[in-house]
Amino acid sequence: MGRKLLGVFLLVGSLMGVCAQESPNPFDLTFRLPAGSLASTSNSSTDVVAVTPGTGNDNPFELRKRPMPKSKRPTVAPAARKPWFSLPKPSPGKDSAKARQHIQFLVVAVIFVLLAFLMTLLRSVVGRTYQAFLNENLLNQLFREQEGRGIWPFLLLYLLFLFNGGSFVYFAIQYWKVATPFSPWSLFGLCLLGVTLLVLAKHIVLAIIGFIFPVEKEESRYQFLIIVFGIILGLFLAPVNILLAYGPNNLHAYLIQGGLGGVALVYLFRILRSILIANRFIAAHKFHFLLYICSVEVAPIMVLYKLILN
Image 1 (tube, helix red, strand yellow):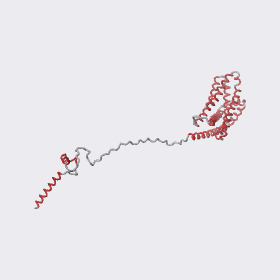
Image 2 (cartoon, rainbow, N blue to C red):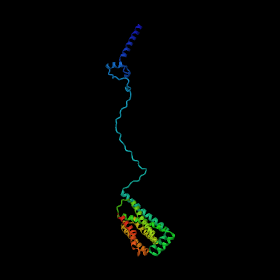
Image 3 (cartoon, helix red, strand yellow):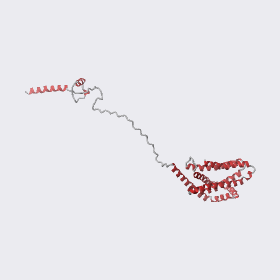
């Protein structure tokens, strides 16, 4: 009986193996199946897609890279590099007003410093210069003294005239509201430079005349006369410039007119004193004297006048 049951079990097991081989394995990979089994499975009721063996991208568990949409990235302009330190830029009108205030303070400060320095160290020279301005004999005496001691004290005092002359021209331009393409600082520097160059050019022309013609002694006296009158004119313009910088506005018209009148009077007085130096040449050389007056004395004043108006 036991042998019969064993035989039945063996027969049933063999039949089940054959059936299992004939049905497709749902857990087997399709590309590993033989070609015959793939053809048989295509005709079965189960819907299985045939896959060509040998392709490397047929693994259903393989991750595939999704194509990214081509989109233009927004171009961002590089940010401008900011300086590590920058001052705020005010408006042009406010900037000009501040610049004019700074120039006014600078003019007053320089005038006080020069007056304190020169009047302390060269007080006796200033007194002698004022006496020579009024008297011809004292001028000749002071001229002989400076030939032995040197002219440097007078040149230091002469710097006060150059600074005050340029500052007065600047204040006159500001008062008349002359339209210029320059900033206040540039205009102030040009006024100082213009007055300095005009005065220096005149001294150079006189030196050339004294070198060419036999008038070297008279030319030296006249150069010293110009320096003496320039020192007095610088002392006269110092309080005028201080009042133009910080004085009331209703006085500016009188200060400008008074300053121009004072300069004209000193200039005319200097011409009269210079005639005394050149009296022995006027009678014999009238044409040359007139030519000198027009080219050296009158022409710089006219040039300065045209520069202020234009």
